[in-house]
Image 1 (cartoon, helix red, strand yellow):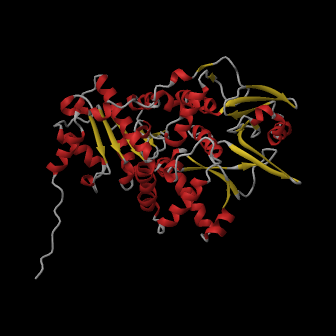
Image 2: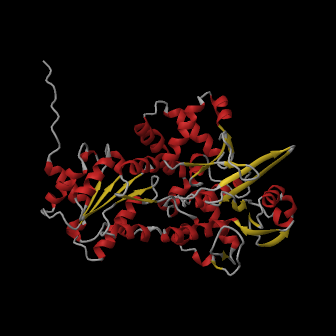
Image 3: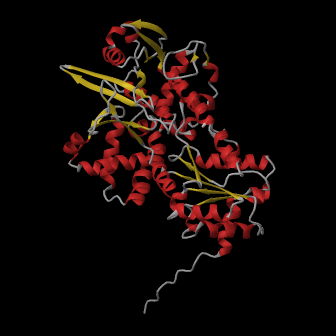
Length: 485
């Protein structure tokens, strides 16, 4: 007679040992060198302001895609608390995705932490819970913790940004503070790689949608790094590893794309056909920056249009893509959104799926546009639009439009080009000039490869700026704006 196997629960001592292993500062007084030696991201200071703010009873929800440095940033914040004199045994880090914590709630884990350090005092704690999305109904647990332990600061992180934000908004009103950590901006890339000598503040004021200006006397070298950023620059680990850059597909695709498409999204949304979702994402990635129609995609793929719409929502939730909506030549929104532009949230995702691009490749212009849009995506409170319209046989398009929040009229317009042609022939910018004239815009911005200057055309001031500098400036200004919010 075969005996049935009885599964024994994981012993409390085993859990306590794991907690001690994850929290080495309880003994050493500092975080592991693995994290300590890594350069902090430029967003670290903004996050730590929220972590160290204990007078407001709010948990911090750190959101962002995989591999952008959320876990590292949490450890850097722990080290800053230690440097500021916080008792090491009042700081705990727990990685929720470890199977040893399966079926354990946050309150139970907090009790085990206090047991591990022999401290029953509930005040003055800093609790860091990593990969919170693996805890079912995490938002309910977190809300109870905030209400039950008013003198404990709680910081959680998760990779499914939009899904986390949805649950945070539903249950955490007034109790959670969200912090979005996107992939690296070009500004961060330059700073982390210590190439900041290549670009410097400028007194040249562009009439457009930026408030701080930069220029470069080393444009050839800066553009070289911009190309590298487009191919490899979204993730901190990748930019410092030649091994990973030699085979980005093995690292980025398997560790970022595949885990999201094959594990995260199916578990969150109950997706049945993961291969279908994977094929859909691959198509969008290849044509990043191009306009898509769900009707056309549905007919060509045989997938129901409503299902494709859900796939778009899921991929946005995973922070793999961003959908940009369209206006006409008067900046009027369409009642039915049948067309979109879809951008990767970071251009290096495309290199991982296919191959790195050369600056002379036909598709490189689309990836420059993707790179510039990815800088704007860091402004999670604001989304640009694009304009496309048809008048008779003329088809017009402007790459990027900013609408005034109150009047909903165009505040600025940008045409993204990886070419110097239009600096020499500004009259060919017919769509941009027509859009500006129709919407009473006195200036617009056009990116180039390496040309910089101002040209008046048809009463419109065209500000020409190298794409690499514009991408850098958007990142600088975004960081400064977020610091003031």
